[in-house]
Length: 198
Ligand code: MN3
Image 1 (tube, rainbow, N blue to C red):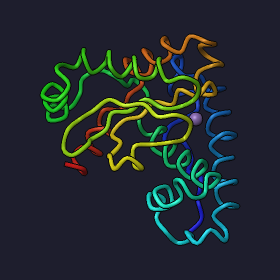
Image 2: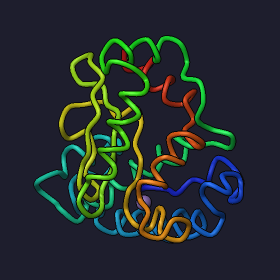
Image 3: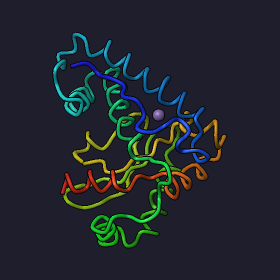
Image 4: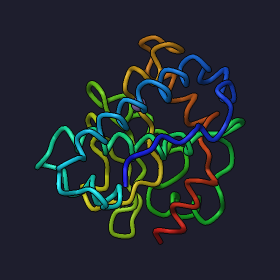
């Protein structure tokens, strides 16, 4: 099985003004495409052909850095496009909201922790909401690394590589994170992953 780039689940201008069509054209058509193209080249002869994407990510980690970086970023971006939608943000589905309050204190405390994780990730990386041994946690990872390699289930991730926000926000990463959280998150998709994992 080779890696494939799916179309965006919405129009390129669907997330404007919070994320422009120009950003999505570069991010999806150029950056994500490059992870797929390079990942397929590196998959050939790696011994991991035919494995699921999750297994390729887990099994290449620490052993085949090139393949890991591209496969992990492919995995991250497949979800990232679905973690956003037009008119996103707003109310969190009930069961997930109750779990957030139980494990992280409140929705406001979760929001603050998530924005802080994204703002304090030095250089490129991701901010995450994960399920770890049945408990929700907010984490961050560098580069293409993701929660799978730590035995955690990623429920929500925000790409804080500059290519994700520089066209629209220049260096103002915190403003991008606020817009992501308040106006772009597709909570139904987050809840779907939460229900599947719990
Ligand atoms: Mn990216």
